[in-house]
Amino acid sequence: MHSEHYAAVPVESLGGALAPVPQALAQRPCLEDIGFKPPAQPVPMPAGSSGAQEALDDFLPRMNAYDAKRDFPALRGPSYLSVHLRFGTLSIRTLVKAAFSAMSTGNQGAATWLSELIWRDFYFMILHHYPQVVEHAFNAKYEAIEWESGPQAEHHFLAWCQGETGYPIVDAGMRQLNQTGYMHNRLRMIVASFLTKDLGIDWKRGEQYFALKLNDFDLAANNGGWQWAASTGCDAQPYFRIFNPITQSQKFDPDGKFIRRYVPELAALSGKHIHAPWTAGDQILASAQIELDKTYPRPIVDHSAARRIALARYGELTDK
Image (tube, rainbow, N blue to C red; front, side, top):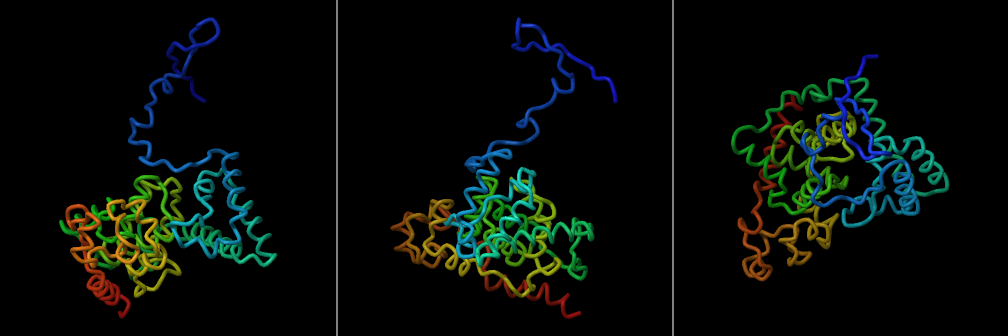
């Protein structure tokens, strides 16, 4: 042990006496001093073990519908327990026990949720046995991918970070992350696929941005998720599986409810046109008070063309 240097700091106490406070504590910066700022739209998040139990109690009655609702960001489908797992206010064993018990009664939602908990544990195992994944692709042949670089790539990356890609479901997901510190899991897959496959930008840059923004950031799960989406990881999606941001939007936010919340400049568009506003036509856009490249950007890349480039980028390495 070492001796502390104390500084006398006035405090409100019985009799108004001075209490000794460690000098290191007295000089410690506040959160704002080291770059932390409150989110613009805080997520209601009960804290501590009591808050974790409250969140678990909220999810358990919804567990049976988890498999049916978990992919739709406008629905209350996820457990929202990841931040409690991240900070240890809930035990993974508690959740596995609840899931397994419900699954044993034929609850399909519980079975699907348990599989997601197992994925989380799987990524912990990968990080433990293959620590090189922190800096490198698990699948070593994909270390040779020539990711996009230069001014245009930087412009694309910034547009992705800010939720200004011109693809509403991608932009809604990124804005949710920026405003709340949370992103729905389906959207994490969509935006990661878009960054790595449509924009051709190194998955490590997206991983680092998530690490900066996510309240539930966990190195193993974050790394595993990004390497899965980039097709560089263990048991990752095949490189030729490239999410179409328009069809993903139509399937998982069919009415555009989630998009309208986080991309309000598109709120007046119908469910038919909100997924790809540039196809709506001038009259429809005008009636919705949308002017492309002014009130909302055009797509920064053409998905079909970007898909062909991505297939070639990965195919060169796969065929060797």
